[in-house]
Length: 179
Image 1 (tube, rainbow, N blue to C red):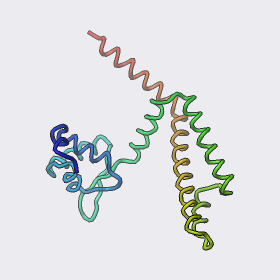
Image 2: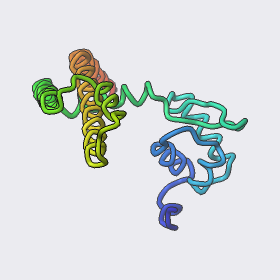
Image 3: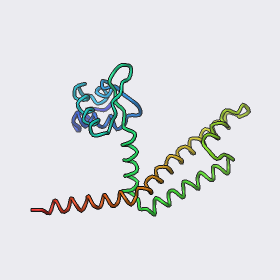
Image 4: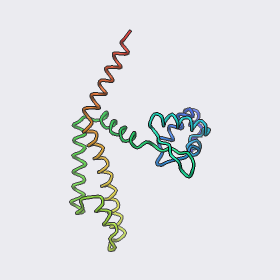
């Protein structure tokens, strides 16, 4: 639980947003309010704002109003972040590294997909150490596959995002220079 500095340094709304950023699944309004150390009304109001801004989705959990992060918004934020923090060349190099890592795993473990690694986990003749190793490799494969997917999306969208971002910067500069 946060210390008293949490309450002094952040408003109730900021604390609700912080709790929401850390969600790893749906949470009721009261649970979010408790974690943020705010009233249920404050949490509900801020969650309504976050929903209207497309940051969270409202749902029902055990008959109670709950919220979870909007996965579409999270995906676009991750892609935008990759584009803003990397050049096209850096993204291409990262994709190459990820594909090489996947190819090395594939060659070493003679498997071409996550499903194949998962099927092997069900083999009866594996020791605990072999199961642990296969599980770790499957998790690595899954993480590499997910990151490679994000990088591919970023590369597909790169020119459009850069163009739109530089256009927005130009518009902002023109607006700030207007009398």
